[in-house]
Image (cartoon, rainbow, N blue to C red; front, side, top):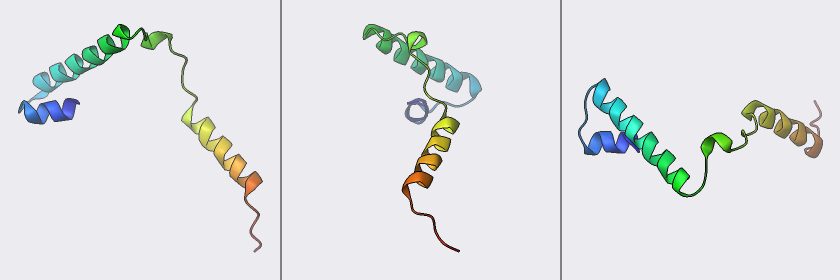
Amino acid sequence: MTSVNVQQKDLHGQTGIEREHVDNNSAVRNMLLDRGIRPEALPPAEDVKKVERRLKADEKKILPKKKK
């Protein structure tokens, strides 16, 4: 959203782009709050590294072992 707005509004420099970023974040947060979602109250997502390890372990269990 920020990158699209930076191009459309022809923003240049750190200050203008930072302001756009902050405005976009505020808009998204307000939309979530309007729908009854408090981001800080959401449970944390599962760690990506743990998911990757679990998938690798599952693949090893499912796929047949290759002979050398």
